[in-house]
Length: 147
Image (cartoon, rainbow, N blue to C red; front, side, top):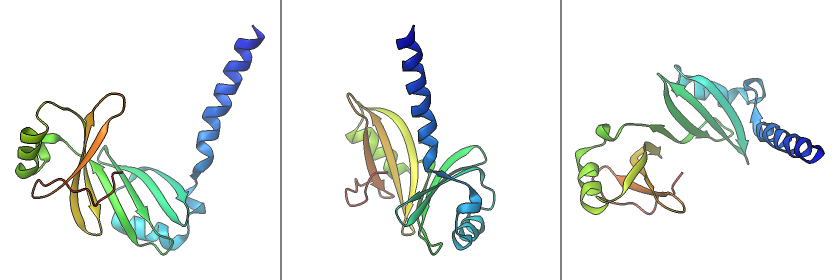
């Protein structure tokens, strides 16, 4: 019985420690917070985390999950949002249907990196999922890191 209690306690502490990276909005520099609010004024369920000198923020707009990175001066470095497969450009869908037709799609996201639009597709794979990034023309882009 003591072992079960100890295991439950260790697991509970592990879950609590996962929240240590989260920041309160009050702890985010005002220049970063103001830039975020100007860009994403409709954001809800906002969660901040500091990553090195940058700030990662997860949020929702109209029940769609988003994630963004801003530097310490408030510059938007990149962001992504969930999207439906049906919302993909035809070139991207065509490339997937041709080159990845036997793969099951797990997640579809639109990426904005340095004001360039990309589409990150996560394919269900064993033992780990594979993420592939396409440009708007439907070409695989290995230069942009998966995220």
